[in-house]
Length: 338
Image (tube, rainbow, N blue to C red; front, side, top):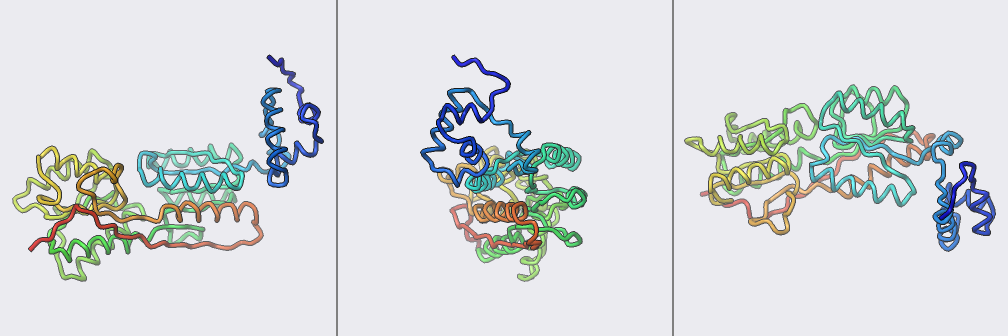
């Protein structure tokens, strides 16, 4: 067992590993310039000695922590789970660490998490914001940041988003072309960019086909599974229930499926369903749900590329505005209506 001294330095590591102090320093700060064999030898020596670099002290000297903060609204949402994984993989390839903050879609908590990340001296922030006030605060703080899945028309900022409008148009057109005229909607409160754009796409598609929207079949479920369960249960007890349902996220889709099961109804015989985003267990679930597939890998990779460029090359001063087209994946959850 090694007894550690509080004054242990990289000199001790270098001496035991039989390399120069400069090589140890380079391994910790610029590892791509050190051979894999040497890196392994130095790390093995650190483990033997129980040496842990003081990253806080190093960040104060270098004015850089190689850390990016992530602010997301709902870690339970499978879309954000998948998206974060791509961000993590790409950031790691450039030797950056991530600090993940979940806001539970709460504006006050979102601001608290931003304060926390700034106090931890992160180099930049990737944020899926709820309010414009958070973005204005970030601009005032002068920290590099990138918006994901959100656009504020009156605020100049870098962003990457899915074309939610186009995705909703594709989903609605698909149901209408199958003969559906009475379409129920599970949506959010209408204050978030994706929610607004998806409902706008649905509405415009209905207008294009000269169809009326049944307001009683449009439900604000706050993107929550439980609320969608109750909304769908109520809708299916209407004298004239919808023949199809368009759910604006995977959690609400799960709630809809649970409601169908509770009422002993089947998909698509009693109700056709289209979901924005894939539901968990899609590969084994039957029938396979038709859904709008967001380009999650591209969203993660591009968001990370943008924030790293802003951190590493601040003088470039470019504004990135990227909107990616989603894709309709046809499953078995929709039937043709005569």
